[in-house]
Image 1 (cartoon, rainbow, N blue to C red):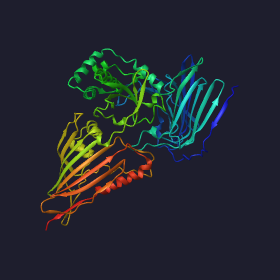
Image 2 (tube, rainbow, N blue to C red):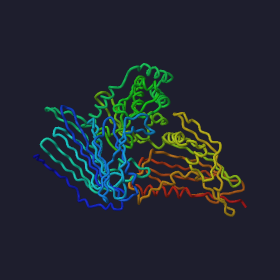
Image 3 (cartoon, rainbow, N blue to C red):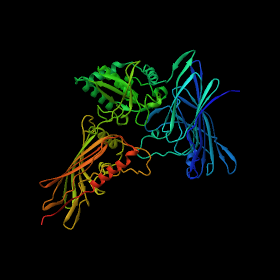
Image 4 (spheres, helix red, strand yellow):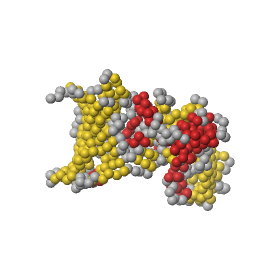
Length: 627
């Protein structure tokens, strides 16, 4: 007989949830992690049990199942079957196919999956699945989602571990659910259990943060263990994570670096300052090394040798970061390999000292006390700006074998991503003619080039601009399209074209109405306050400045000019002014976004901004014949 010491941490009462109107629900999702330790070696397994019910026949596609694994995790002992209550019949899965996983963004991956389909699934069917994961590295216990895309009647995570092992855990987004937490203490082991009953399904929303920002989940990790009176840290804090990363860095192939150094010398020879040299090196890596992703066990964590990357002219994020490290330091520029999570990961190194915290690698240089984050995987981002998807994130700089720094990547000022738009508008035979030039910098330039490169496909340039810029009306025609500095990372991109817009200026009796807002940026950005649950994600801050000059036709005079309008908020706003000068009317318009997220409590303010902007967009100039 075993004796247990039991501690219960009970939340508020959980009431039964009615899921009868759902199409598909989980009856249970349970995971049990078992940790064993013998002679400083861990044996870790995870038993997973899932049971789901099809309340209707509308989502039978959930019968298709994939169990993913890689070099760090194996999947064993799969037992899957369908139970049909109407006939009390059990039908087992009799065929499981193993596939290697690839997608368009991965050059090589060690990820595989076990794929099968639950048989005879129909309304009322209950599918049952159990399997075991063997975790081969104690740093990869993973996470458990209390909530998922469909409702769950019982979600439970338990972990069983020896008393000489210390466990850490942290919950995310659980403030609005009720969790029953139970601690059990036995003679040799402890068991922690978290249980949630009747949790609703979570649905993603357009332009929202990743699911990890709102899905209730928990991350568990091994902090340390004790053997013969000595404490051995595994992932007690960020310093232990860094020690592991350092052990991987020591395995980098450093042969044939003379080739890399010669390229570096050739690149930097024309320049005298460290900033100029750093920029030249960064631009060379951007232009000459093609980014491809590798996910191959520890190969997904250990950078490949700089010489090999130079020879092959391709590499993943850590390969490019390491190449920058070797080249920059050879040029006597203070440079550090840097681990970082993208904005899809809502974690801090100080809260989650596990490999879950990051998924990317960049380089950091220090020049004249200026910290510059370099991410050459973004082929178009200019030197001096971080990749947009690393803004706000903590960066782990590897100073040397024993020391590191954690710095936060700052949000870039909107003025760094400035678009200047100059437009000359006239009316010829009732058709609005526009000569327009757009000058893009920063992330605005990055976005345009990225869209042009990857989304234009077989569209003509006119078709691409019509769907990208959305100017005037559905009769807008583009001619004389010209793009300058497309491949020049250091210079603003210039886009110019002529527009011909039929049926845009409206004439009623002797008056003609003309709207100078042919570009109505953000006009479709109103937030549905009633239905939206989560914050609105914005990729980067930006500013757009318009100077629009309308030439008043001969024999016409101006009878109405709109009043100046504005909306001023620290995080978003606009201003529009009109000035008449001789035979022209000049509109100056500025729109700015100075935040990366619109929180739920800001929705009404945001909508007030959009409503005010749309109202301003509707204002017309009125001209009439001179009598």
